[in-house]
Length: 278
Image (tube, rainbow, N blue to C red; front, top):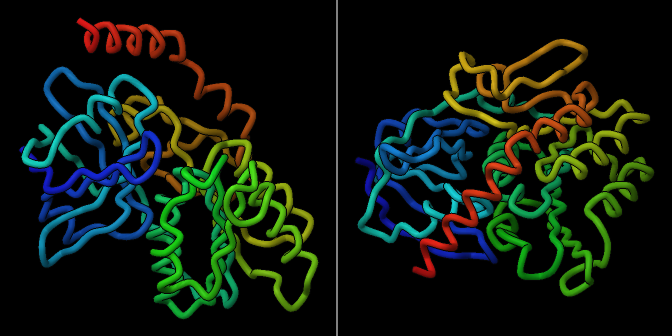
């Protein structure tokens, strides 16, 4: 059992959960993830380790309640626990000193971006964070990012916070300015957003790293559920990733595979709602 020490809702359908997992906290590196198994009958859910404290033995996870299993997870209060937390899994982020780095996050993707941006800043990079969401309520971690980023730019689709538009708008302006152009770009968020960022940076030949979260079951490369096409070759996000060269990812195939179990998920959500009303 892995005790839940704290569970806070920080945005609509988004919770920050702090879990006691000393071994994982000691070994975790930026970019890695865990697979959470809430109980013996639950689905296995991959979650990025947003932060870790080796002294207290805790890890921090951000959970977006969009499906049956994630809704069950965020409903667990402090004092409850997870049956299993396996990790750290995946390859850690390759941290180098590029100089100027842009970290672009969309919605809950900002939670995945946070540990990467922090590690890049600690390595001596000048980090620009560009984060966005549909509205102000969906923009997260802006104040946390300001602690180590040189600048944090915010966009919202409805203009309720920061600049009206998409995260690609300020990025495009930086790309065409030789003085402000980043030497590397990290992008995490919805597939269309990551694809748009990769297409923006492609003509400039700027290294662009994206973090992928396809369907994943065992986290060891055995099930093949998380396979993605990168540079025309099959890769497994759990063991070859989760980060890949954004200019090489087949985003169309990735988007298609993410809908594989949509009908089943709808049925499970209906079941959860019926259980709640009974």
